Length: 329
Image 1 (cartoon, rainbow, N blue to C red):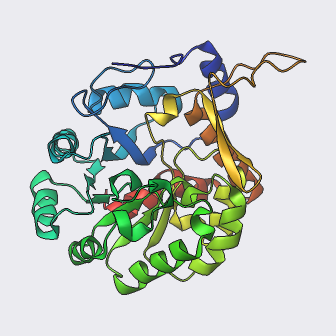
Image 2 (image 1 turned 60 degrees about the horizontal axis):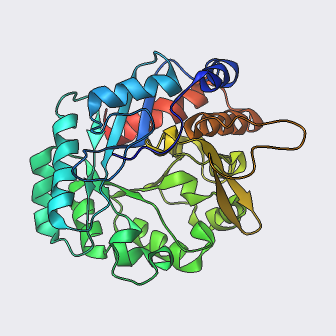
C-alpha cells in the first residue's frame, strides 16, 4: 500500500520531549481516530502497517503520548461508497473494539442507509454511534454539501432513540459560520436531545474566525460537543473553551492524519494544509524540518489551554474526562 511521507524520526522525538511530554496528563482518551484494513483503503500512514487494528494503533500512539495509557473511540475508514467496503470497515472496527471494552467505536453510514438496518448493525457490532462524511452525499461538489445531504434526519432520529453519539465533519467554505450549518445543527440538537452531536476538528475551525463568528449562535445546546482532531490553530480551541465551555471539548488524534508531516494553517477567510512536500520549508534564513501533524496539534492545544488559564484538572478533562463521561468509558 502507498504510504507517502517520512515516518516518525528523531526530529519528532525531540519535539515531543521539548513541547508535549510535560503538558500531557497521565491518561488519554482519543475521541476521534481511525482504524482500517487494506481491503477498504488504498494507502496507510507513514511507518504504519497495511492493516491498522488495536495493536498497531497502540504502537503508533506512543509517538504522540509516550507510555501513557490511551483509550479511544474508533471510526471506520473507507474510501469507497460501496456497501461491501463500508460493511468491511465497520466490521473491522467492531472486531477491534471487542478486543478491549475500555474502547468505543462508531458506525460509518451512507445517507441512503435504512435506519432500522443501521440500528441493528450498530447493536450487532457493539458500537456506540454514527460517523457521516460528505463524500457519501449525492451532490456534485461534496465540499459544498448541506449537512442533511450526508446526515439525514431519519438517522438522527434513530441515534436519538438509542442515545448514540454522532461525529460530524461539516463542510461548506465557512464551516460553523455558515448560516445553513448553524440552522441544521440547532435543529438537530434541539429536536433530538438524546442524541449527542460531536463537531469534529474543533467545529472544522481550521480558520478560527469562523468559530469566533459562528459559535455564539450555538450556545445553550446541552448535547453539542467538539473534538479537537488535528486542528493546529490555538484560537479555534480557545473559542470553544471560552464561548461553549471546556467541558464540551475532547481531544482527538485523527490518526492517520496525525502521522502525516506538516500542519493546517489559517489564511484569509479559509485555510491551507502545509504538507511535507510543500515548497515552504526552505526559508532563506534556515531550513525547517516539519514534524508530524499530531504533535503540532497537541502544541496548539497546549497554547490554547495556557492562554485560557486552564487548571491541570481542566486540561485532564479535555484529554480524558469529557470523552470518558460522554461515552460511558
